[in-house]
Length: 129
Image (cartoon, rainbow, N blue to C red; front, side):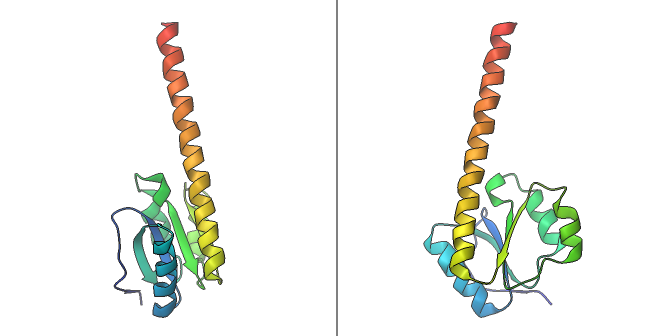
């Protein structure tokens, strides 16, 4: 059974899954200290529903599920390949937090590159007409 806890949640941010309430609170604290917002925090394995939920977010920086000491269920693994979603999973809090920070930096760079490419195409098209 899924259990939600009283962790400060934001309208935007990452989805967090952990094996126990204590783990969930500990990793949520570390993420918050790093300025990483949490949109959803639940106990239990990473599910298909988690992947679908984050895949539909408008904010590409929120399209990640972080798992601490939890499994990625087989049906979640099946659909992850077709989604623009990241999964970071592990058993060491500080390592996971570092991985999330790196993922967010990389994602921001990708977004900026895509934005620049879009601007270039728009400018090029304006001058070619």
